[in-house]
Image (cartoon, rainbow, N blue to C red):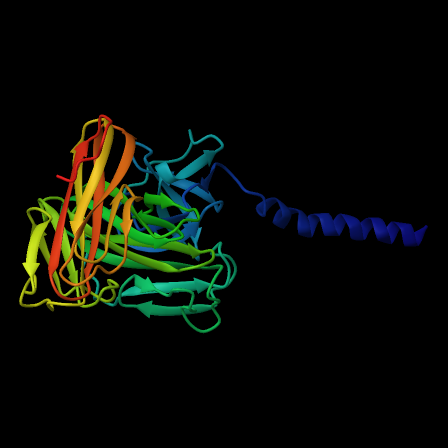
Amino acid sequence: MQRKLVQNILAVLMLFLVGPFAVLAQPQGPTAVVTGSVVNVRTGPGTTYTIIGQVTQGTTLAIIGRNQDSSWWQICCVGSSQGWISGSLVAVQGSTAAVPVVSTPAAQAPVAPPAAGWSGSYYANRNLQETPAMVRRDPAIDFRWNGASPGANIPGTNFSARWTRTINFDRGDYQFTAQVDDGVRLYLDSWRIIDAWRDGSARYETGIFRGLGAGAHVITVEYYQAAGDAMIAVWWDKAGQYPDWRGEYFNDIYFQGPPLLVRNDANIDFNWGIDAPDPRVPADNFSVRWTRTLHFDGGDYIFSARTSDGVRVYLDGFTVVNEWHDMPAGEYKVYNGRFYDLGEGNHTVVVEYYERGGIAFAQVWWKEYSGGEIPEE
């Protein structure tokens, strides 16, 4: 009898001691569940405020405040710090009627960070999972591993990587481009600009962000390699910077390293003969990548290229012409490719060309196709 009485007293004491803590452990009030892949948390309600951390998809955070129009939520916590997260990048659970409006000081003008390259995290799997097997600083995202390992503890296939960097941008519209084999995603301040998370051979993927505000913005690039060749290169251009073709001229035939020259070319219509395209570019064993976004009427199209040596033509990442081989010295040839049922609107054309030696010649054009034989002119 006494033993049972002691057990009951102990049980009551445990409820008294543990009960309050158990209640505190339960989530109170509304929560925000992160829907973006990698989302920035800031010191205030807006993209001009300083980033204090990042949270990943599925993270649940307590909502403790809001701005005037409820487009940003004050949350707790990232580490030990309260912060703000964009309402467009979370799913709210529970009633927010009682959430108070929180005033914040105006954001200070961001300071341009040092040009320290990209923070790269490499994973020994295709899904950016678990602890990175390698972390390093990369001066540029411009890699052609071709089956080789990117570095220590990383296989040559079935790996993934995530790069982040803060860049100071001028105000304007920007086009972001990735040349990739296999999958790629690109985020600008957590907005997904390129979403091509799939297996595929080398191709171009593009995305446009209009009305970017001046100041510091965070770019995140995610990549995975399945099997075969492995490559990724990422760059961007401000609208109007290259009104015609953006021409990148390289010191080899493989587009490796930073280009020797980037310029605006009015047309792809060159007969350099035995001369170099520019004093900064060699006369032989060079390559050029031209990129341009134009408006097309809807319909079927024939894309044509007349070149010495190799040429490839891509339309919105799809390969239309693929003739990547040498030509006999002094000769050139016309190659044609068809693209059916192109939708009306803006489309990105990318042309790659290399010159092995001898005469350098490159012309590219296209016409709507209504059937019949394909003319060479």
